[in-house]
Structures are given as structure tokens and as C-alpha cells.
Length: 287
Image 1: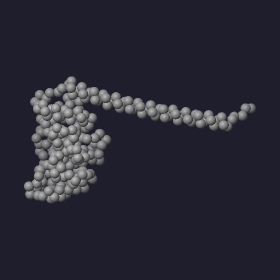
Image 2: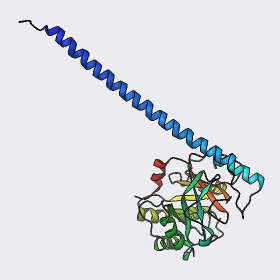
Image 3: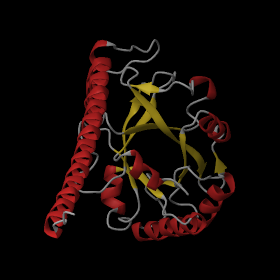
Image 4: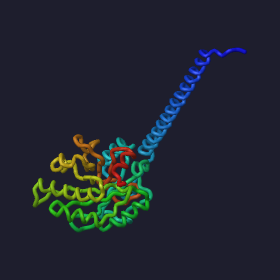
């Protein structure tokens, strides 16, 4: 009977193990390569579709038109951010009859609007007359919803916070509450304004467990708020011919025009960009 050489058997086992490891690593690399190629293909497909729509399938709204300068400015921004998430915001200036909620797009139909932020309340006691209708319609059409409070700088922050909380029923998946501050107080100092805004924010944060989003214009933020709300999500309005709303500040959203022409809306609206991807966008939503 022949004897098995232990060293030979050991070498065969080592060789077999190495081959398995080699094949495993090879399959992993091929899988990564395949996913990379698939992702690249999808990215290029979306890019081609976007540029084709922008330059070869131009949509002309039958009722609305911007100046050539404003059209060029908007198109430049949309092109720069075409892989981001776009949305719009509305208030009592729009009506239910103006919006066809199930088909809202920009860039000649190539970019869907995925979120809408609507004015809910104003000051101590006022509520937007269209809020309840808009709120339900946005949900019915699977848009991410957000609600904002228009802050009146000379009124009471506690009453204003309670007005918002009593008027808005935010649910899981909705955006965090939004504080809209854009007016200069006439009877309060800058220091008192900051103090009051922090009171409003604290009440809202205690209710929802998340810091509210701060909305304002670039120059208002620069002159009044910078350094006081740096750890709050920032939504800036800037309608100038720029590619970022602020070079100095970390911003989450940009309201880049108040003259947005949307396929599916019969009046001009504010258009917004979320500066991130779908995963990070979820961080602005309530659990």
C-alpha cells in the first residue's frame, strides 16, 4: 500500500485555499466593476436625458414667460445642480386651481419637483388660508411636505410658536418645521430679536426633537443671524447671478428664484434646490 506524503497533502490544501481566495477576490472585483459600470451608465443616461430635454425638447408655458436674462440665469443654475433634489414653496398667493399636483416638472420635463414647503402661519395668531388644502394635496400626490412660520419680528415669540404648533400636524416623513425670518424689527433691538428667535426655536425643538430649518435672505443672514444659528439647517434665498447662495455659509437649501415656471403650475413660484443626495435629504425629515 502506497503512503501519502504529508508535505504534498499540505501543499495541495494550501494551493486549494489560495485558489478559492483568488476566485473569491476576483468575483468581488468583478461585482464592484459591474456595479460601477451600471452606476456610470445610469448617471450618463440621466445626463444625456437632461441635456436632450434642455436643448431639444423646449417647453413653452402658454401663460408664463421670463426675461431672457432671468431664463438664462435659471437654466445655468438648474444645469449646475441637475443631479440634486428640486422643490418649490407656496403660500396664499397661489390657489388650488393653479396647481396640477400629479405632474410637476422643470427643465422641459426632465427634473421632477420632489418637495413642497408651504406657509402655515404668520405672527401671533394668523394662519394661511390655503394651508390645509395644500397640505392634504401634497400628501395625496406623494410630495415631501414642509411647513413654515412667517415670523413677525415685533410680535411675541411664544405666541408665534404656539400658533404654529396648534395649526400644523407634522408627521413622520415631513420636513422639519421652518422659521421664515426676513423682516427687520421696528421696536426691538437686534439683540432682542436674536433672543426671541431662539425662544421660538427652543419651543419647536422641544416639541419635535429636531432643530428647525432657518429660512432667510442672504444679506439678512449676514447682517443679523450669522454666528447665532450656525448649527441649524440653513435655507437661503438669493436671486443674484451666482452659482451658490453664499460662499461663507454652510447651506442646505437655496431658493434661487421667485419666478419659477413649472410644467403643471399656472403661476410663477419660488424654486428651491436641496444641496445633497436622497440619503442626506432624509436627515431633514422627521422620524
